[in-house]
Length: 466
Image 1 (cartoon, helix red, strand yellow):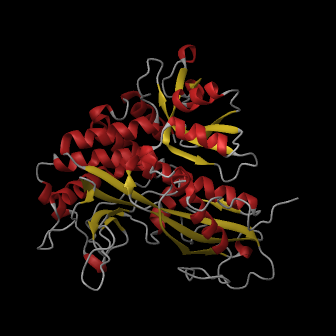
Image 2: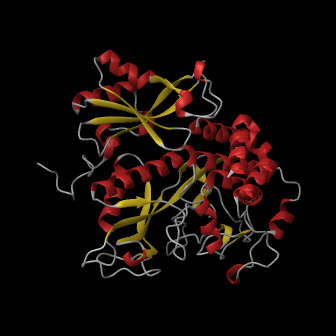
Image 3: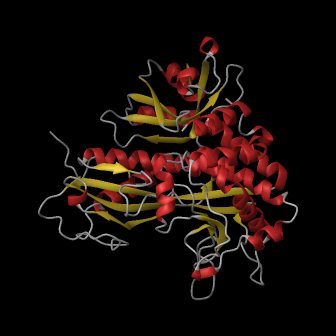
């Protein structure tokens, strides 16, 4: 019997595996997952990982025995690195790599027809060290380098914007362009799917802040009978590696749900000229001893850590487009300027600035209830989250090491709600300009052994060839 549409993909158990195992993810063991496979009668174990193209990959197993199951969970399995990281310097004659499961990143596949345990993985080289070309490795090395240099962790959350598309019918009479922000059903058709996605993400261990409908809407008459409406899921602050995985998994969940419902899900930066595009705004929070650091001091001035991050992002924003704005339509979104950044400035009010300082929510007694963040608004739905966030971590070091940081911040501050001056530098308008910026700033990306030099060479070459 066909499962009702409203129930397909629904999470089972309510509390996720933390509730079922009775302990936080950080305390999970191989034996815990082995016991789970037995108690849940799980038939498939899937190793999921992010390949060189930034997409999720899977390697599936049917465990033959208890020993085989433990080996899979604890040690992972070999794979062909020259295929997974094509054109990234892994020779075909010595291409074996190893997928290394992360026990704390296990979840039950909410879409699998057969009970399936998924483990997110990193990658090891033939010699057992982390694979340099792996997005997971690059991000973790960048985070380690940041902590070694500054003693600060950087956490982040992504605002995952997406369009849902469906064939128009006579019930679709409510949508309107630029009027969908926070709209409720029946004025948006994707509310149910979005709420289902929120529940599934919480179930599989992706922390969520909230979800809502967005301003974008494209009438069916403009797209050959398909209507498109925009939504957003904003994640919760997490360490950078978890934040990057969260963005990838959010897009995976949304696409699966759309497929189940006969819809399309698009994170393209530009759906149609003249309409809002999909950004991927990233909020950053410097952390120390597990607590968010202040963005401003008692006098309203930028704190030291905030100045480092903002100064670094202002300097590296253009180069970061190599990983955050990767398709031709990325430039169309920026030029169009519908609350998309087009100038290299920072400020509190200007939504066309590269970096914004959002308002900090407080209760009636003035207690901060949402950690203060620094919002980087340049990236879009074409981004490679792991590489983008790795670059941001390295940017903070660059900001700390800037000789005249105060002068830089004064020169690049926005004019406020009224906008920016005509003299403000513009973001790149083509791939050649992005390539030039990456070549100029490559030493920062290669610092701490984060980005392999050969990888930067290949990215620059591809950008110049477009």
